Image (cartoon, rainbow, N blue to C red; front, side, top):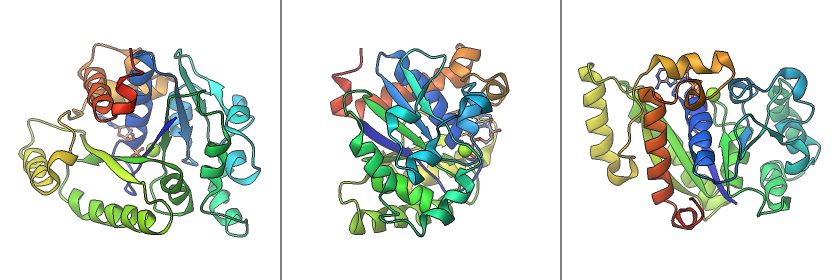
Length: 261
Ligand code: ADP
Ligand code: MG
């Protein structure tokens, strides 16, 4: 099971939209995929149509009750895609975990304990902070995928995240790396977007995915219908972009290229 955290401490940059639609696009290639919703707001769970009543077990149980991945996961409407939903309990987890043993390694323990052949890839949708929840995700994963909104302060926020990744690497998880930065809400008509995109590529080079995710209203409508854009309207430019991102993602993962159909 390859583990990827979708992280950026800024809110509203497209983490959840990327987690949902990339997970769906990967499942569509025949991979079995698990999405862990690690944001107390539970947007990934809602966006995949998981009703609040169906969240009997959640990522909260994973972190605080030592429940297993298999116990907490529920199937989604997409074949090959399971989710561990989030509930509002999770907002208390950061404080509750402070008193627990191995508080930075709770998610890793749960993931290490799962049957490794049940899912081929696991995406973790992180909350918009660099607190204990995101730290658990960074400790538990192999790689970080960073959605970056093309706006003026994009690079400033990014350096803080890169620093955190480096610290986690040094202290807890030497194998941690960044699979890539994906530019989101790209608006071709906006010259600032182009400028930011050029700057980001100049600084980060090949770390930036070639694929950019355009600003597309279908992507923002889909969650209110409880489905990924790829189901809601698989031909919109947003869906096409996430299919392209999934392809590029797979080529960056040699181990996975063999497994995808
Ligand atoms: P995050 O998880 O980083 O907080 P979201 O994925 O929830 O960000 O996106 C924030 C808001 O922007 C949501 O309302 C979402 O529907 C919308 N959104 C995300 N990506 C796009 C896009 N490419 N085009 C248009 N709207 C988008
Ligand atoms: Mg989110």
